[in-house]
Image (tube, rainbow over all chains, first blue to last red; front, side, top):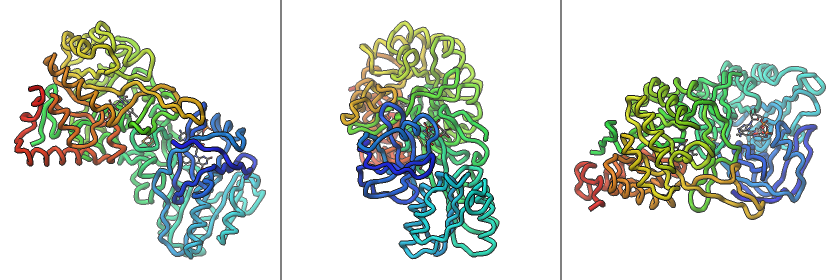
Length: 258
Length: 300
Ligand SMILES: Cc1cc2nc3c(=O)[nH]c(=O)nc-3n(C[C@H](O)[C@H](O)[C@H](O)COP(=O)(O)OP(=O)(O)OC[C@H]3O[C@@H](n4cnc5c(N)ncnc54)[C@H](O)[C@@H]3O)c2cc1C
Ligand SMILES: Cc1cc2nc3c(=O)[nH]c(=O)nc-3n(C[C@H](O)[C@H](O)[C@H](O)COP(=O)(O)O)c2cc1C
Ligand code: FES
């Protein structure tokens, strides 16, 4: 655990802020840290800006993220990591689907891909215009951007999955990446499979240790640990998960059906 | 060559997954068996579901690992399917149980037996929850009472897991023996704390937790040595086993098997295979034909 000061806080959307920390933390796209909010809790968060002044982009959800949103530059946070298996780019033309704060690992992935000469399309989805994350960032990086909102306040009025279906019908992609709500990822995997596009998805389960020993984040039935062998898995691995799209587990280990 | 026996359970090798490590989900227990564990101990399960303490629950420190998970578990009623999956691993499954009263210990152990476990391990040693665990394992009378009550109500072997956070570990082990306990595991974590000096507060959500890893091994080895010297109980050694050499130390102190906990973080789930191979290499080099020749040699 390293304790560091918050260097800068950037308001990204109504409910999402980016926290730049006074810490140089080299990491690969899709890796995460365990972030300790002293006196509150410790939570897994994707690294949205790897390297110098490492950045985390956080949606205000429950008690801990609400506390984070009240914090100021100069406040102290604890960081463990980087942990987890990264998203790996091997195609020459890729498509990524980010739902809501799921754009946090997708944005650095796209920047890395384009810097390596890979052609990239990003489908950025949110409930409404004010919640769209990192549209300018991926556009600036040079990606083709397709925006969807549930209420039609920006871009296409549809789900990201609908836009993906259209795009895969129109264009040929080598590889697909996705991060967002599990139902969305479930559908993305189905659509990509239909079009024979290999896919990596960023899984979310309850985390405690982050280092592969407590068993909180295990997926049935192979016993893979989301914190260690994940959080990013390939479609061939995900197809074997009995719980994906069906149930998760709470902090006690009890199954919670979606 | 590596076969051993503990409380009537036959193990292909002496490396056993310790309680609380990947132990609340059947599929990860089974995975540990496939990676070479000779037996599996489940997470400690109680009567009711518990969410456990707030994070941070497990952290790495210079001296090893600290944890205060707080006996998080899904409750015994939900645990049957996990035991069934764990058993597909093909090695003995030991059900760890805890309780806030003697009655709870008995009822959870009885259900655990119904689920088909090969033995029960009584967690009399958790340092992280006030009125469970170590509350029972630090007094001779309560230890006797719990062990006796569980022994009277189940027919599978009963193993008591003890803590070194007590004035007289041998006296506790003797109380287990009087209650006709089949064996003991020693040791659980040692009470410990880490304070972050920049935040000016303990890091663990529960503030105080338990220390695991190499730094507690000498304490574990001494505990095993004394229990083996002073009682006739079979013992599983636990605390800081990361390599074959660590395991051999415990075996030489008199343990019939060793449990591995946070070693899984340092060497991966395949640590069971690795430690077994290292024990075997040592045996070949030093002309040992079976573990029996090693177990207890240091007792002199
Ligand atoms: C690998 C990974 C990367 C993540 N990256 C991001 C990110 O970049 N940005 C972001 O905003 N959120 C991210 N999350 C989700 C984030 O961890 C939760 O939103 C946060 O823990 C909520 O805490 P809370 O106290 O505010 O809310 P709570 O009310 O405590 O929880 C709200 C919901 O968050 C989830 N959650 C709570 N605690 C945990 C935990 N210990 N582990 C996993 N999930 C938990 C549960 O689904 C819960 O129902 C990520 C989660 C994982 C597993
Ligand atoms: C995250 C974690 C959870 C644990 N949970 C339990 C538990 O539920 N029951 C128990 O008897 N011991 C529990 N322990 C203690 C271990 O079983 C073991 O006794 C201890 O970690 C020392 O062994 P080690 O150094 O090999 O890890 C836990 C340890 C850790 C690190
Ligand atoms: S969070 Fe502990 S094993 Fe994954």
